[in-house]
Length: 219
Image 1 (cartoon, helix red, strand yellow):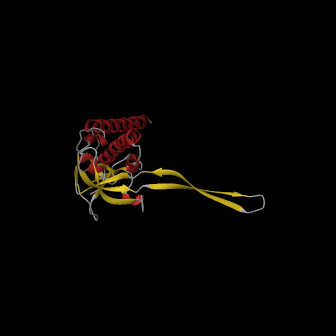
Image 2: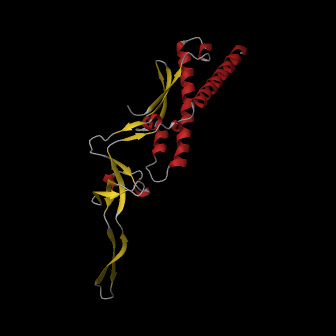
């Protein structure tokens, strides 16, 4: 299952202040919307802190946050693929592939091997961190070509092709059969922060309702 769901319990003492189940559920949704805004802002903050080379993962996670009523009260959902894995951690194994591709350089972060068509070859190379040989996808050595043309006064065109840059062979991805990702609870605000946010949102809603009722009684 992808994404994360945060449940807000409808038996909170705050919700018991209202007389109907519909009103209690409405307050629960109010609390969930408050938490949703908190979570969204938190994920946007992670985008600014952690995004360097990837495809704006945390911004997309923030965009996927929503709040809704559920039988238990209300829920905040984050549907971004992989967020649950980052939050709780656990093993990662390849699906429909022989190995996982782990970025080995900044240029590969946020990309798949398929993003480098015809540039990569599978080979055993020396891992500088361990001093041992391991399988990797390596970008072939290549020479960039500059293509220029110039139109002469007589109307003919002169073309020039010159090498402009040589790129050495480079390790782009390590190939592994399995990895274990450590849990990262910091991808969400703390439980205390989310609870406090929900309580504050519900209290504000109750205060507005009481103010409206008081104004109605005076008329």
